[in-house]
Image 1 (cartoon, one colour):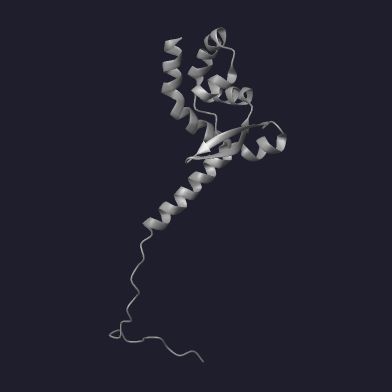
Image 2 (tube, helix red, strand yellow):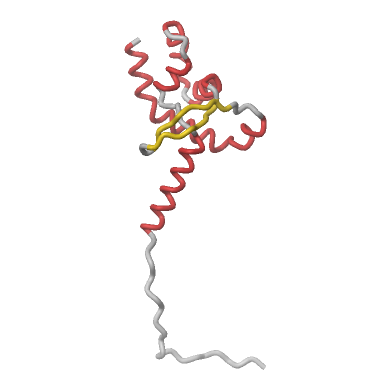
Amino acid sequence: MDEINEFLEEIGDSLQEKWLAYYTANRLWLVASGMYKEQSFVQEMNGVRQNASRPSSSFILGVVSILEPRLSQILPYWFKFNSNKEELINKLGLNFDLDSVLAHRELESLKMQQTQAVLLPEAEENTDIEDNRTPCN
């Protein structure tokens, strides 16, 4: 079981990114189809506890087992020793509100763009160049 736990910790970060990418690419049809059944929980983000929601653990595990094929090889062993899907979701670091995380990232990206914005100096008028325009009649 220790090897399984080590593997789950090893793939956690990359699996979170794959899960977010999948959700981002498929959000519209997931929500519209009703396949995205939300489960409520309390989430702490940046030191603030808030009500959050995410898909059911079964839905998440179904998707991520395809996104990370090695996980589908481990799942039978996990469930042989522990049938708690919520514990597995926590171990994989997937117990978060997708929309909140994506909104937070978008906000951080906008802040970064603002700080990186470079203002160009105002253009100086060049009086040495002749005006070669011809008047229109």
